[in-house]
Length: 171
Image (cartoon, rainbow, N blue to C red; front, side, top):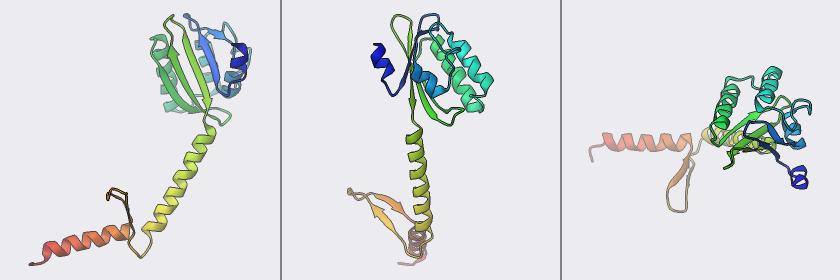
């Protein structure tokens, strides 16, 4: 088990029934930036959270709400998850799973690269939309089943003009 935990890309944490670390994980400490003096076998999850709060890891109201909800969910034996940016700039996805024996399995995954790719894709989409909406020609795209999937501003104006012309005509 130790070899599996030590060689995973994700960080794994097992909390016992008292919500203390039961399995030590260097990857969790690395992903979240926790010193071994704080995050170790026997450490209370509340103490780790308090350390992170004091360090400013939950600076936004959204981060604070996520960690507060997570702590309630963990104490209530409910699965929970959140995504947040760490103090070091990583984007980490946290998930917890209650186990039948009262322990909680938690995983930490670095999704920084995925979030960067999503941001790049969104920026490219926004650029493409700006280009298409500022063309002098109308552009419309259809799906294979005939549904319209996109129309630029010029095409929408063209169709709006045609509808109003038809409505105002005497034919």
